[in-house]
Image (cartoon, rainbow, N blue to C red; front, side):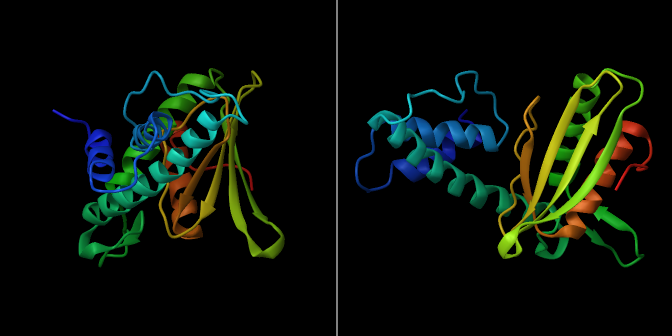
Length: 201
């Protein structure tokens, strides 16, 4: 049975279009597997030397892979949520917050990584909102413990949902619809790690 990433790759690259190099095709498939959180032991930064034709083709394939993954993930989130809503969190008729499957899965992966990579008993998080020139806004969500271990998240706001498998020790860049989803996602992760959502702003 083909994986989801392979099916998306085959559908995009098998239809009539200009031929693509092996490096381009590898770039598409690597990003699809990464974004959809499928095992890919060969995926790594620096697969090709910067400045070469092979690297340029691979990175161009990465761009198409991101586009295909975003289309798939956005449609998956829509299927998760009632009434075809695409938010990660939304209030039901009783005023309670419903959590989409995408948010539930991502928050559990994040919490597991935090528990694994921050071994101390005094894990804590801090939220810091930022506004860049020209109006770009995002939220920093940083974790640390008394051993000095650190794991960070940069939460951007945009139309295309992007929830890649979290990694350590790098800062993880994700994209959600708005600040409401960002705050609720942080709260959900914190509750799964700490049992509460008490942190620093």
